[in-house]
Length: 355
Image (tube, rainbow, N blue to C red):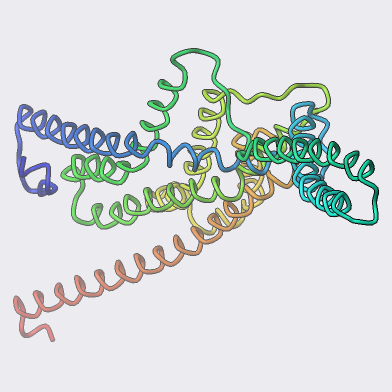
């Protein structure tokens, strides 16, 4: 168990059985962490469902600012306006009832006229009561919710969503366990180069998921749900929506790994930062293709929102790779100077008269 809590040293020598035992231990730790995280996410499944459903709010046009042709949204908008009308009608009828009641008590009217006014007052009381009850019965929850089509789908969909959220939570620990398992194969110099890359992976992935959730996903859902809405009764199935949202945010998170890829290929000597600068146009074209695949909407604004941070990350990764390359060259030059100085000292010690 102790070997799974810390990486094994490069100089340590383990047998095949010991390597398999270490792998099993790390897998057990990752599985245990996933179970704990899944228990938490399933316990908080209502909060997670609310978070994932929130981008659907941008797909509704119930305020009348954008006239949606979706029949279901038109019905919902009619219910809202009807509820507002009923809420305003109740107090108005109550005022009319009070006026008639006061008039029926006036001494200026004959007893027959006062008696004839009592029946409308009674009917107005009943009407006010029913109108106020109807206004109170207007649905308060006006947000669009995904629909389920099977008896077990609410349970299975909740389980799947909680599992996805748990995987996201334990991702840093899983990456550390994988890193610690392969670390002994690297020399100390290679380890210093690999450590920043491994540390950037979970940070960039989480940043990509957050960017996709807050910026790109609401716009993509809004475009897709309101596309040709005059031709469909648009109902959103929960299973399909959650799968789309998770894969969408996961794709954005993976696309945010561009700096890791750039640093990896430059550190391995496949390309140089200068070559990346010279071929910047091809890279931007590739980023546009990736953004088009990850954001399956013909909306140019959504695609631009996805491309912007990726191009920025690419430019920053070039700067970081150039800085690391300069430092590596300076360190190599310094090491060569030290080696040359040590060689001269050794030569002077061997042949003092050579000076």
